[in-house]
Length: 119
Image (cartoon, rainbow, N blue to C red; front, side, top):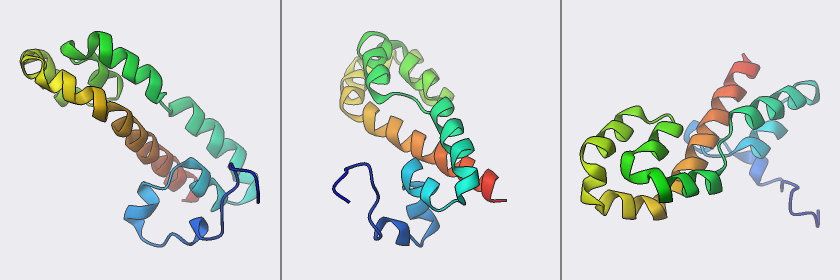
């Protein structure tokens, strides 16, 4: 278990649904049968957004709300667009928060795919 990509046994013991939603693709993939894992990881890779790319979009186009539109947060994107990113304040704060928001959206997407495969 020296490889950093391997998951410890404590990661597999996640019980609550709220923790499962934040677990991420690796933990959820380990909970699926082996024959479904490849399809799960392929679907997660197709839907996942790269946090670094979203940060770059936020730096250059965040004042227009484009970063939020790319993440699928249409209402926040419109609010950001119509308020000129809160006169620049919202744009500046998003520079620090957008990567975490991207990871959360990726985890929610992985959980949705997990639930579809499990049913």
